Image (tube, rainbow over all chains, first blue to last red):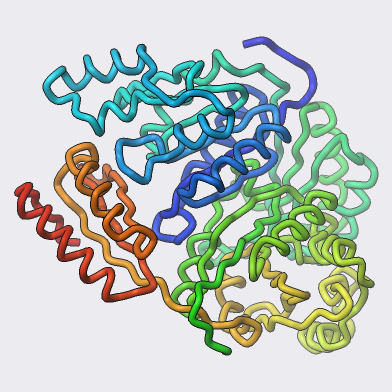
Length: 252
Length: 252
């Protein structure tokens, strides 16, 4: 992976009626976002969830492709009629939609010639010029065209394919984070956090998240930055505030 | 609620770095989407997740406001520095950002005069002309301005507020669904489902979702339509296919 010093942004485009309708709980956003940060120093700056409708896929692929360094799509690359991601992306970039010979060979040898039916063959069709993202779980590959990287929607299969994305990505700086959970409520520390954020400006991102879990009530303060030293300094300032206000910390 | 016969669409705009970074698993999309369909006959046609950045909030609020009948935002209406939803929406619509007198009274009586500090007062600030969405959990109200309805990010609080949205919404036709889970794999039924979708065209939406859970492998076929009779007819056709192919159904 080629390394760069500046932050690399990206978007996730989730294609699937089942997520939009609420039938299926998305599990890919948090996984992909964490994985990209830890393994590639790439941050996810926007997520969109859209239905299996060709013109909506075309619009969003082109729009996100212009706005972000990489776009990761999930869903719509299976064998059924509602899997239209590859065809739609071909139309978006005005390239031919047809068999990728390498994908065809992989699938043919996986299923065997007699079981390689027309629906399975569909999974070897993609935009001309695509490069494959290999699938160690169920053979059917994802693909990369321009800055769009297409993955399946099934979380277990997607997860198994992530390492095979690396060769197509540049490596940016990792975003580090430090989380401190306090026995308090947001409005008690809001003014202090505001001052702290103003002191560090864009060098750090300070988040404040109230929680109510297992009978415990509190606030998690999260410091995020690509610079570990800045996090350390900001943490020292935060610990001073905590001491001054006599707040208790959760041991998590 | 005023009833209309045609489908009503909407979008969800999730505002929050913690969801984008993968730190927090979103639980609001599936809940809000299901709730809106069952209670109001409103379907969610797009979801976006964006960071706590003013210009990104302004752009997306205006963009989604034009494209969809309603836009539901979640997150960014608490007392801390990173809660900038109300201010950003005021700027988006070029209206004054200031105290809403009713929200101020609610919060003052909830906290008591002495504990109603500057951070808590911030939660009474919103775009001029907003109407309140009452909060039975923790007092701080959401608000509605134009076709934007702003809710908090904490799932338990959001859920408690949903019934108070109803008075601002028109009621559309409920989307009904029927799900049949089969002991098979997608490529075995893909051709049949394609034919079935072509027979019914836009009157029904047929989805095919492979699953691998608790050691069970199969495909869920989901029929969705605002017309119950169409679902019934399509189900009969599907059962014929299942019989002909001698497929087993899961009892779920």
